Image 1 (spheres, rainbow, N blue to C red):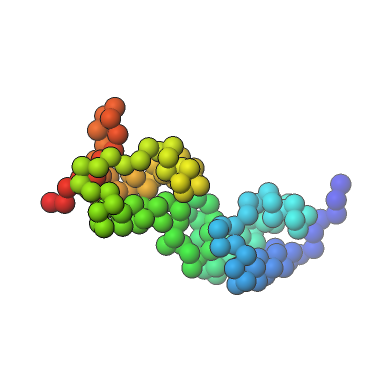
Image 2: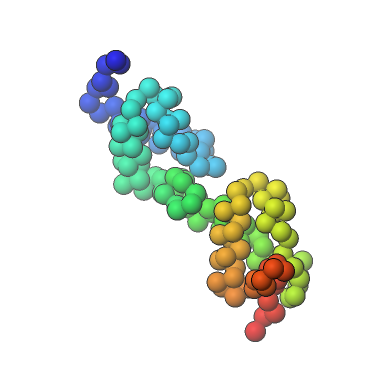
Length: 145
């Protein structure tokens, strides 16, 4: 059985992660708890304490459906970036009123994200009234009202 880590280990880990955040290492999101635990050879509880300290300090943020991300990029969750890009295409006429949106599979491939991320982005556009779903047909750009 490995020896327990000394008191304050979570602070050492949080400081190391904070330095990596400042260096831009985690621009695409934080590694999983398991990955951090393996790297620092500590229990998941210690990792959670370190991540909690970073969250309390405002260095990272937890986004539902995405995971932990660097706080300064919190406004740039993957679904938000996709939503903004699709909205830009709608506004500049690349996706005119009445045009069918590309399929979820096409968007997954184009943006390199999960199907759930695409669904969330499109759902946000639907909620905002930019896109409408037609049962069994697809999603279409709504005409501005």
